[in-house]
Image 1: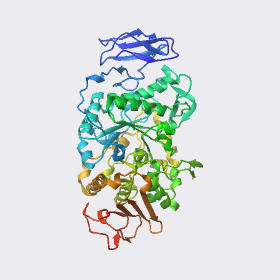
Image 2: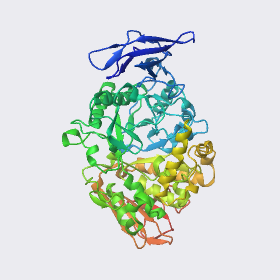
Image 3: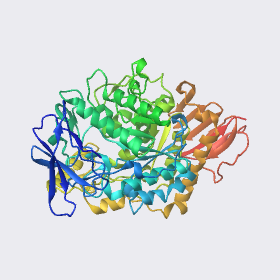
Image 4: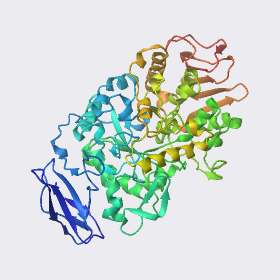
Length: 585
């Protein structure tokens, strides 16, 4: 590697090397080009530890590929060409056939490493998912955390393993037919180890985010910030063979440029996909219900492939739990079934409607979209973790209610996303946890979580300590559970639903305008029709009778699994909180 760094306002830049014999450091002056970049003539071999000194202030490389000693330690050179890949010819399933499985490396196993995830891949293949989505890996402060406060945007978190360990995980996924997505955070950096301001105007005070300083995407010298972000994304896709990225909270990427940073990113990712002959996808997290994110650029869009659609989760969650605090106020149980119908039919509940929780109109018409453009879930890291105790859906309701929710999700026209352990109703919660090293920050995080949860009516005494080692340990999955009792029953339910999804052409038709959804709010029943397939859900506490033409192929109130029960020519009595699925003969 030839050292090079962007520092537009610097008067001097030096390369600071750890001496080979471990005794002291060596400093080498860098030369400035005609613009804002400084470079050295030396080539650093893999394993070299180095930093930069900007006008005397020493900090890690903003583009560091490896921070084994943490966010404030030296950067280490990585030669990405030395890893031997065996995934040549692998192609990810298209989004129209995708089933995403979101996991957090640190809690997916008790070991909390890439190698330990690799040992569990056969479980995911048998489950029937097509894509793994890893929570953020960019190096962050402390040993464990969610990863959304990363500061080294090119360097995988050292507590999980080495860069080659991460590559081995991706390679193993590809060998098993699994694509791998990475969650990346470009709207802010974490509060500890954030050295970007030493090098240049990476941040702006013209905008603000809830999590920290906003990135400078459209002000003076913003080209350096934009290049840092785009090159980081390309590095994960090129050097680690990720098949796509999930872009955190893109509504906080505040950019008035003629070419929005997301459009620029999409264009360069498309070029990399062409150059490597691999399909690559970009999925945005966004709370504005704006279809322009995924429309092609010639049609006035930004050219992304899909975005998260939280309305589906909120509608199902509110109907099942009755919760109406915080943002759930927009999905009040009083109109829950009409909200649920809209969510299951088109994804967006707020499609240009007045939002009581936000006191403004939210969203626009999604009718031009396909289901492949909308990623939906009944659980994810946010919706579980942003609770006082990190409870999962079955812990808030019942396993029966989760089965109904899973059937509604996995027979819907959207791209379904599952969260780790959901498939067996894991007992482990997923509360927010962190491991900050600054005592003042530790207390600030604790107090911030208490204030945030007050909006949901939760007592501060109910909030798990986010900085406690015990809170982190609670979130680790127990891999003895999937083979036992009700956990095994739930796992089989998910496997059967995913098998049905794969084998039923109408479930792979993602046209929103051919999905029919009706509801009887008084009876608390919902009927979804997808071509030859009909889903009947009873969300009440009483049995409900109905008739439907077709063969019952799956039902949550029967012990049989995917066993036809004959044509539905006689009324069927569906148990309370149960769902049945029929295929027309």
